Length: 480
Image (cartoon, rainbow, N blue to C red):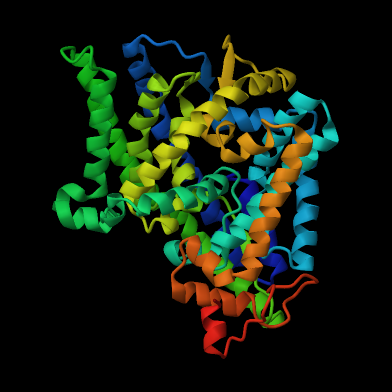
């Protein structure tokens, strides 16, 4: 991804008449940013996986489905029945056609993450041995992330200052959509009145509320829990302190790496948007990218660190769970990335919502483990002596996987398309309300409505269903 994506971005920039040197510099910075992000996520993974296994060993519980993480899941996905090879051109064509007719505003250039579509398709292939059904279900996930990206784009742009960027990510989007009703319910409880965004925490605790101290504290707590049966051994405290410093490093360095990525991305996205605006006044467009550009947010990192011990404890106490956590514990930033706008960066709400989502996540990833293990064998993946494998966060425990891979393929296809079309129709019928549900402010939602849902649009499909939005009237500005 650190090589392929910069090349793709460079070529897209040239297509939109961006200066060659400007496009080259930005593309190189994007590659550097992704390398930095991957290094920090690798640091997180290297430290958290042994602690998780140590915590489970302390209990003496045996869990058969080993978490091998998203890198293994992606490798398996691209190796099943040539699904990964075909999914790339098929999705590119589908995306271009849907953009041309006005179904979506997003052009998803994040080609590496098409593996999510192949992953779902591969699981369906293992259960049906039907290549066409598998491709259709995989592309249905692709449809969903495009619609979800359109839905969340105004909130993402406003919260993360990413003009013209949307996030059609196969891990982040399903969790964010599933989090919306849960957050609504949580907001009705006393937890809804707690101010727990990073600024509020720092105001309350002063210097101790700074990200490095939060990371240090979380690392020390997880380390102590992992070595609770050996606290009088010097080596244990070395491991505990290492965890604390490593987690503090993640909190401090990851935003810097995302900053480098955004330094390259922002001028390109602005140039591309200006080009499109000058030629297609009634047509909005967003460049679809990896949610990695969002994970440097302090709320994302803090929630991801806090959810780690919760996930491990839940894996131990949930009856019928088979998941032994490992590498995917480092994937929680992608789990939380799109929840930040929805919950206004409130860490308490994000962790509570995430904890609720962890319940189905454990059972879905447990149920998927036999299919994924079978898929790994089909793709020639070395299981390393493991009986069952899984990747709980990305994507074996995803709500999308539960719907698309664990029910009969024809039913899954129908349900998936109903969900996609339901969201699409709602976005065209009540656009301002929908954008606000996804976390956009009223002002941002209104601005997006006036930009996207007025005028003739640029495709065959309507940009507004029902009464036409009149941007000059009070009714048009409020949409509802």
